[in-house]
Length: 400
Image 1 (spheres, rainbow, N blue to C red):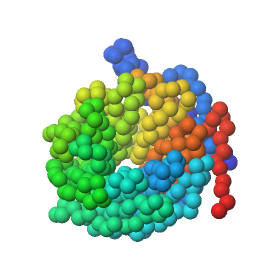
Image 2: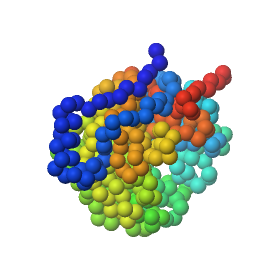
Image 3: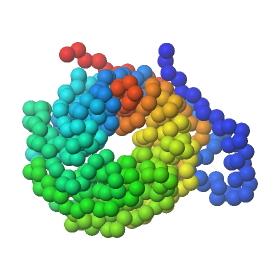
């Protein structure tokens, strides 16, 4: 049966609350991040999903062109299978059977960049059970070679990893957050090796991180979301250009957030940040000013237990929208953006299956539209949602 988008209408109590707020605060209240709209254009951006089996308890998902063919491939870490799977794209929305690579115990996150300066992407995987990083180097023939593991010293239980150039030497570096209030910077030497540079106190239970240049100084920065009990803030770390970072900027907003991502949601040329708040079924938007500062807006409603966000234009109006994975009701919802940092309510739900968690966006068939891939944790499934063009979309097939 063809999946249908469903309008999610607000409950009567929510309507009354919003009317009261508007009555008290007037125009200012109308500028909240998520606004109600009487009529919403009906659209269905995704075709029927295509599914692939993955390992036990998939934990992380990354889209990256691993073989320099111009098509986004997929990397999946599987916690209980203790491995990494590489899904090579055919370039038409379908993927080859995965190449499985052994890593350490309980892999929790993955990053990709050219760590050895040979022009071919490589892979770094954090292993929660071994307290180290598996480094896998890409080869010219499209295969991979495991270089070994990178020790984190006395630091334990890595939970998230990101890559960027933190010191301006054009060599890929790493940032890793650890379960108990720490993070560490590893500066790349450009030959596939790293040096443990700095460790920082991070606050309660860092859950997710995102790397980006938040102040336009050409050095990569990063931001962290925390899911510690009653933690209601994120922290932004701005690079100083030498591999060290300024004291973190604490920005109040959200509550026990589990995921953080970036995107320019108000089209002002500056990166903004978004987090998921599963306990309150809400999202929080932090508007960036391009100088490393962010303004936290009021939380706005999502579906049941939001777990991941992709920022892109999903209704072809040249305005950024949000695709949100919802764990409890097994859906991806689309929140249409107005272009000013606010979003239309009600939104639309696309059923995908039980327990979606990690989700990424990329153009998997080279049609110029961002598609979506997500992991169904409970069923160990990788699901591909291809975008439609003017209501029609097909997923390519390939006979090996």
